[in-house]
Image: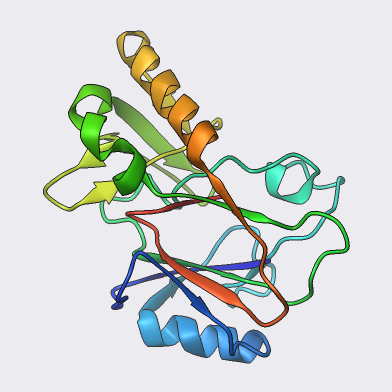
Length: 191
């Protein structure tokens, strides 16, 4: 998969599949049509694309055989990217599924009861921010389940409840060659 984070675009739904992305140039054109591209630290070409493939020499979940827990990108920003694009350049022989989770669908009825506060960081910058898991004014979810989130001990039971719900309701999506998921980074989690 390739990941591109963009901001300031328009999307009709929280999640759409585009089936006409033939190459990286098409992917970048689609991303640019949605807004500004954010560059990741593990983007060696600095073009906005991070290539995810099995490589156990890279010590990050996305490159190993363990699933990357559904999350939002750049949760440490005051205004995180609006979209994340996941594109399948080549279908995997084994595995390769993306995980998605819809917090609006699965957490809305209990959101007030599980809305913990946390310090969010990112591997892409040294900045951090103290924010709630869900901010109603901007309709934004922020979530990490890794070393880039710090939760007060008094809120940890709320975080654990959210993790249980995400684990129980995440869906696997297998993309075919040339397909691209365009999803809201503020209203959907990906892994």
